[in-house]
Image (tube, rainbow, N blue to C red; front, side, top):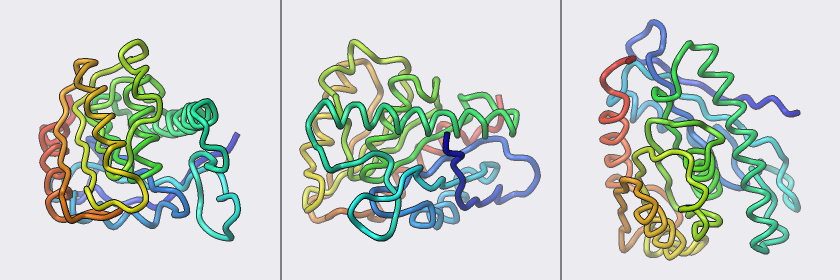
Length: 221
């Protein structure tokens, strides 16, 4: 079993962390791709430790970067199996980190970009990470969204941000996820910036900071 690791940041205020924010990168990247978000969002949750684990697998077909699950076969069955395995690996990592920090899962937030967004939605809603405080999903979507209502294990607050001009993952994927989450009784805030491609923008990052502050800003329960 792979042991995940990656760069860390915080807590901004020093001392023992009162929350954990896990940043989950996309296909072909690694944890270094997202850890810079920690310095931005730490102002909203100064007691949080941010960690950006590297995905467990080397990317197939390219000589750099990591993947949470393979994309060579994009059939529904293979994608669903892949994201379940990725969510399991992420869940084991998050569970170990939370235990090490003596934090309950309600003090954990998950954020993901692209393939990472698919992974955190799977992990946070279907139980691999039990009952997290919130899930932030950027430029991704949810694999197997049509089956969520019958398999949902938790209902954290969810933020979805996806640019309408995304040239890699169509924004329609996140619209399907939004609809499935609402049908399953999940509180969702969704932003679809019209000019944003496959990336992050200030509005989406500010929305992320607000949700982190709402869910984690009060200190340990």
